[in-house]
Structure formats: structure tokens, C-alpha cells
Image (cartoon, rainbow, N blue to C red; front, top):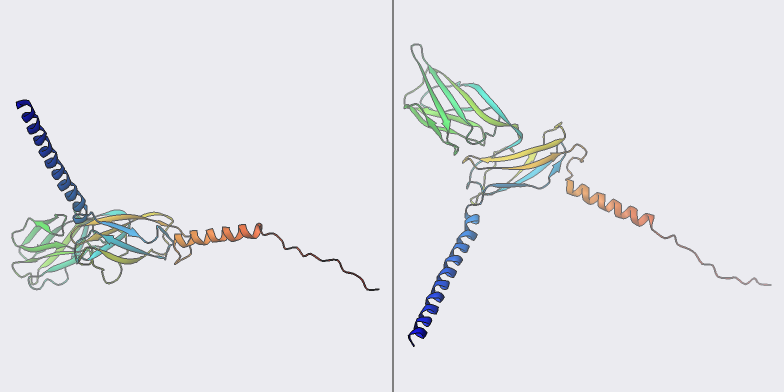
Length: 271
């Protein structure tokens, strides 16, 4: 009798343990299913994977920051070093802003050196990219140093006026061969998506080029575009393939079309 009771208890404990494991497994499965949706990595797709120089390509992005400006680069990364930007108007406390020559800027690659000169003194400071659109500063007088990866703008404010001072920002960063950001600097929606149409530079050599989209928060995604001068401008590779297929079908039907034959019945001649 005791053995039977112990056996029943053991079965009950096993059943409870299995139920607990099942609940835990289901909970983990739900969390794993939800997580990719909530923290989807930035990604972009192109409406065509091939285009001719001078043609256009529509870029669609997901997983970017909400309501953030977007910059789009085409081609390989290009390192820029000691790029000097004198500040023309130094009146007041800023913000004093410059714009790099090759934009957008690769997040995490940016830094700039600031030199403020007067007749009697020279003050220098450095600013380092944190990868999220903000900069670390070596200056106790700098206010709100920033970098805008999408537009290439960067700068800082100051606690005391720079009237009559000479100010030079010198930037070091990684940009891209071509800035193909559409006019007006497109932004993402409230859900981190965007759609923008870029123009492939005229005269661009045939080959594969990276299309890189970057927002001001440091989110970045890349897709590959094949540039092919044999593609008629404005016609995507999908349309070319469709037209080629239709041509093959029409040609096949023409070659295998059976000629019509006319059958003439016998005619009786009147006497």
C-alpha cells in the first residue's frame, strides 16, 4: 500500500515538473518571438538590384530610429583626415557649425579638433564620436558638441563669446564615394521606416556598389546595387528580364507556327 502511494506521489511530482517546464518553454518561445520584432536590426531593400548610370533606385528602410533624418551614401567607404573647416562667423556663443565634404558620415568614425585663436591666446580641444550622434569633449568650455551623420554637419557652442576670434574645426572621419541623399534630407516615420528615391550618378563605371543608409542616431544598413550601362535608363532589371522572356516566347511561337494550308475541292467543268 505504501509503495502504491509513493508511486502516485512520484507520478504527480513528475506531472507538475513537466507542466512547469512546458510553461517556461512557452514563455521563452513568446519572448524569443517578440524580441526580433521589437529590436529588429536596421535593414534596407532596393526596388531593383541593377540600374544604369543616371537611373533611379527606390530605397526602403526598416528598423531605424523613429523620426530621424536619413543620409544615403553610394560606393566604398572613404577615409578623410585633417579636413579643415574655418568658421566664418564667430560672433556670440554659437552653435558654431561646419559640414564635412564627404557625407553621410559612418557612425563611430568621427572626431574633430578645435582651435580658437585670439591676439594673445590659443585654446585647443578635441571631440570624439560616441557612435550615437553625440561627442565626448576634452574641453570644459564646450557646450553641446554634436555630429549629424546624415547631413555631415558638426560643431559646438561655447560658454563665452568668440567675437573677433579665429576658429578652425579640423575633422577626421569615414565618408562615402558619393552622397546620393535626396534633396530635402528624408526622415524616418514614427515607426523607424523610410522610402527614398536616389539617383545613380551619370557616368558611373559598371560594377557593384554599396548603398548605405544612416540615421542621426547611428543606425546603419547596406545593400548592393549593380550598375550596368547596358540597362536602358529608367528600366529596371526585372522589366528587362520580363521583356526578354516575352521576346523568347514570341520568337518560339513564330518559329513553330504551322503554315496554313488551303484545301481546294474538285471542280466539275461544264460542257
